[in-house]
Image (cartoon, rainbow, N blue to C red; front, side, top):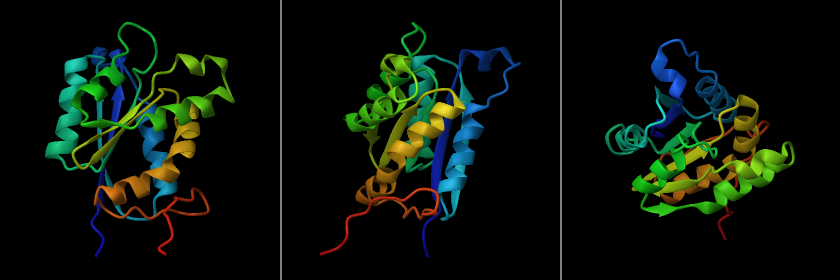
Length: 178
């Protein structure tokens, strides 16, 4: 029996702390993952303010305590002074995975010239992959379409749950056995 994957979804936004904010980015990630995945998975969804210590604490809780094999953040990746999601991610990760950010920026540049301002990144914390996405739902989907094919194999290599995908929507890359 396949282990049900837990996936953390973290929306980072200062507007979240004022109590009148309706998050559209986190639900866009959940909808995209529902499109991609055919295997069972459970979201651990939170909305938090742009505070580095809060982001770090949340990432640690989702990976170490809740057992998420994948944590996807949205927001806080731009050049504004309060955008600190990449710094929080780097602070809690054991190893960084720069190819994710490079590919997301390259993909986004096909649509907007300001993609060079984005600081998305990814890293590994113990047995978990953390991926930072931009904040707009359209950009979220574009970036996930670009990087998600590598994510199931990354989770495999970390001995996490086997993520099965709807190959009519997204085709994961897994090397063929020799």
